[in-house]
Image (cartoon, rainbow, N blue to C red; front, side, top):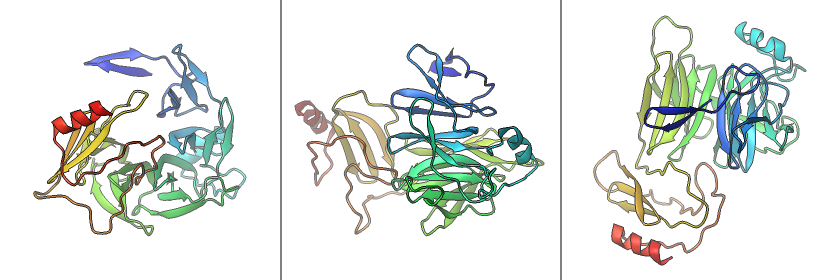
Length: 333
């Protein structure tokens, strides 16, 4: 494991015990959690720089995610771990109703304790986890379906429902919420789709057309600088798009109260933290951007999930405030 230190410097953060690879990383509750690719277990980086075991739900986990204040893992094996990789390579799909059913979503309950939150129909592997509309979503193989947790606390498998397949793809490698919409990246054709509700997905792009290979992957997705980025395999190219006017501050705020301000001026949106500008986004077309008629005003809410914190001193203005006014408001709080 390596940590970026700026410039071209990286520092060694040690190796996951008994592992030769890292498949998933996620920050949660002030710590970094990691899962290996070819062995079981989840590990937490402690304050001494050592990787501490957080146990295993009984199978490999290929994706980690945070939802509603809890850490979740995406199952990537059958219960029979030893035979899982061989079966996957052979293209065998084990129905979930079988005792050896694969996939599944698991919640970490502290220490080395994990609780199953259900299996997904005819799914061998779960590859991606994302929160959208306040509910947990997962992408699967080999049916290319995305499932939504209608009730994450429902017993057994009753809480999951399919919200559609992404074209003819077989694996949903990534799910990412961006500017109010849910996007998915796929295998074997490295395609990107957008969820349009009513269980319908619209193709956005095919990003890797490398010839004479079996699999092409939209292997990673992340939002940064107000854009959606997608990394691909085997071409190793990175692509990005901008949808609408988006301004994001891609840094963790230190503890305590902060003055946040969003400003819309014409086709430009800007974000200020404690009176200082931190991000700016521009519309794709000239003119003035404005919410569509009937668009609800949400404070502390959004397409991904609700804000897990406190709001105070909320003010709305009928004009775009200038930098000097925002500095004064931040200083006066």
